[in-house]
Length: 120
Image 1 (cartoon, rainbow, N blue to C red):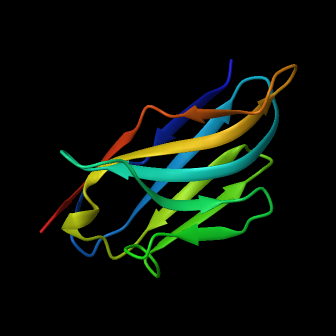
Image 2 (cartoon, rainbow, N blue to C red):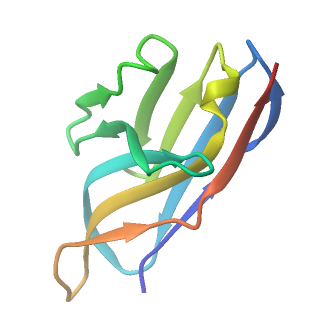
């Protein structure tokens, strides 16, 4: 059973920083694409950042220059460093990954989400 567990959310003042983590566990053969999405109340879930297995990243325009997505393949963990946070960054952040389990097929997995609240 593959699981993704996010951590690191919380309450921070505007201009502050947080680092989110996404740890994958279970019988995993490989992890390909990983991404962070966020969903604010009443809004759709949007892609914030993504990273390939080779480390190539892509960011939403709204977070470019402020967020950095990295991954530690040995630890099966991804990180989203969020700097210069703004109130509009407030949302539930979800980690997703394309994982190939041992004796399984490549599938999409999601974490349970972690709340990020930025006060003005």
